[in-house]
Image (tube, rainbow, N blue to C red; front, top):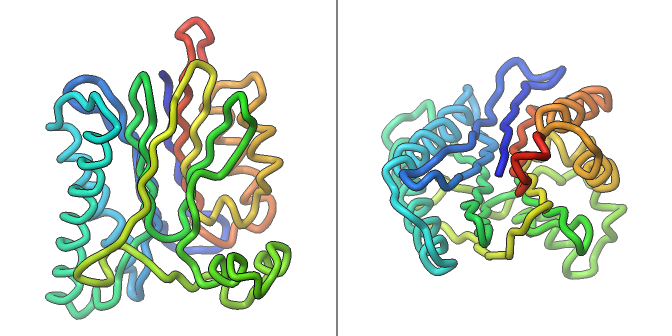
Length: 249
């Protein structure tokens, strides 16, 4: 299993409020995370950094995750804990009032991947069934699509596309989606912020993941394409590939 993480502030933003990483527990299992911070006065980067630091430290002390139930419990517990931490910080520091962050996190084992998400940062899987999105955006526009009020094409250019219905750290309690899928040789997992998905189509993401390149080359091509197409937002992604060491990617 190979993995790469990459973040870029893009071509317009002065600061990078995204954060993330790929971390290893005591058994060598991976936790990949992407968090897209939000809030005025650079509070967004405080929220995303607090979230990543907490989850990294907790994961690095964790033992073996052997079942889907164990991965579900770990993610749910850890994300609820860090939600409380971020929310309290925003309440106690006026310059951080209203801050929060999206999160998409995946525990990756030799048998399965368990993905948790809040907000509009996404997870995709490329496997023998093709390329598909694993997560649902917790956004106003996605709810309008789901309820049939607008089309997916309309959603791409909707003026309230950035309005989230859920985020980590904005309230004392938080709801998240968690699902587990089988992870097999040749499968590729992509986690990313909307700075990537707003600028690079699913067809392009699928094409890049399927090509015979290293994970680093794939990540660089995705970031480069997002910047080429405007780069108005921070761009962050993590790729985890279930690949034989002989494949060298």
